[in-house]
View 1 (cartoon, one colour):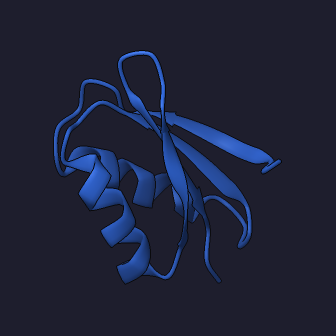
View 2 (cartoon, helix red, strand yellow; view 1 turned 135 degrees about the horizontal axis):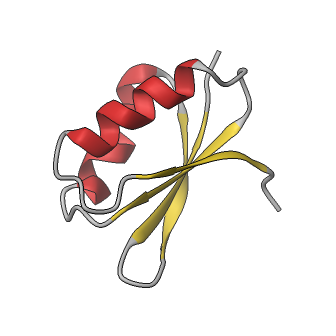
View 3 (cartoon, one colour; view 1 turned 90 degrees about the vertical axis):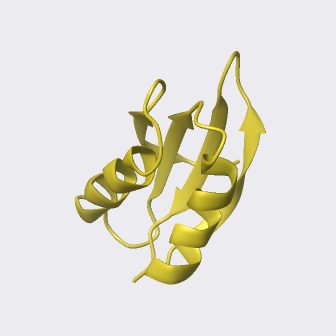
Length: 77
């Protein structure tokens, strides 16, 4: 099981805000720590993995929450 260091609630925010807020929150984490991102923006399913790939973070996947999606991001070095 992945240990989640922080959770970011971006429910109700539209593109590009969930990714921008995730980028800001990841800055305060140490490499290897995991951020849980909650979002209901339909574009996040594309934006979050793309952001991870471009920024050097590991996209650990997503799952369905109640009325939102849950994304897991491991901070890169």
